[in-house]
Image 1 (cartoon, rainbow, N blue to C red):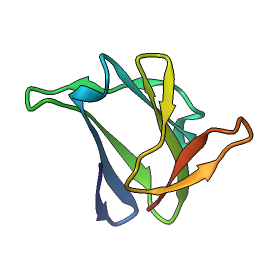
Image 2 (spheres, rainbow, N blue to C red):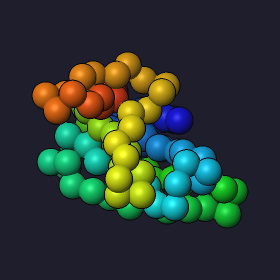
Image 3 (spheres, one colour):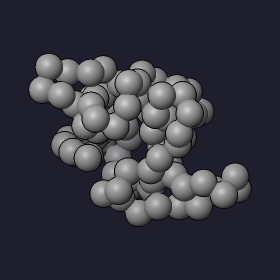
Length: 92
């Protein structure tokens, strides 16, 4: 799930996934050159991470589950990659 709060030239984007999805989750996106960023497991049973991104841009991203499985966010438009997998398209 994605929550976006926009302010001036930036957007605070909250990425969350249920803990039932796996043991570990890493977020990777075009905003960081696809660097893996671990999501933290919160007490409420969700993996969560917040990113501050520039407005009026499009970003591709995905989630790496347990270091084995790549998934896109079901709440956003999927984009097929050159590797025949799918990324999510985030427009802020």
